[in-house]
Length: 349
Image (cartoon, rainbow, N blue to C red):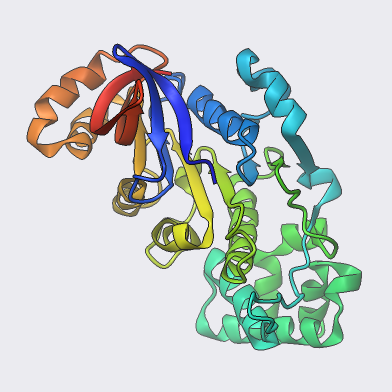
């Protein structure tokens, strides 16, 4: 994991994010459209990749990492380090039903695999208790038959199709697109070491994107608990993530609170602090050890000013209102011209 990440320029010199001193390695970036947060995100990913600090997964939901949208200064470095996964046309290779090996030499129990897959799908599509029971049995059947290896995630559809019950049919209906498209298939893990693994998701609807992200993050959490990322680390980049699950029991909250000890780092970008649950989203952003606040929507200036510094919220509201494109207020453990600094200040990306 990258210990120092160059982020911008202050009047006193170059500004770096100091991951060793931060409460955690996560980075939250917020601001209105066109304020400069996407360029900041690309710069962070580029710097992590160039420094060879582990692997990166970019969940590219809005074409931020398409060639034409990458800031010219970072384009060559990002392209050189990229591994493209065109999820809409080629699907995503992931050994979802294969038990993992832990660092102590023990294998993951199949019961844990079945429970994990059931939990993430049930949570993502909001299943009731009885529906969840039917899904669990279908997942268990697929695991026993090893049919995922042959049919991919469509094997769950085949299993549920054997059940003559409206609850099984309702699960199929909720997962119809992801089953028919068969987005996940068995094979080697899609993550290439020391690469920017760009998952192209822009051709899917927002609800399908959210489901794909939930499944992959849950699988990554299984890998992390098996110690896969302890040595080199894994950075997860989520753009325009306000539509994802921000509940306390959700996978993003779990990674925010516990990811550091397992080698995981989140880079989160959101256009607004609203989303489906304003309180949960704001809480999660504040959990990030490093925060970049670009010019916010007018109706959020007072709230953001308070988030930056409650004692000087009036000052920060004034500062936020005068930010130009490419300027932000950064808050966290910083190094300015080789001197340590902890707190908030205005910088230019």
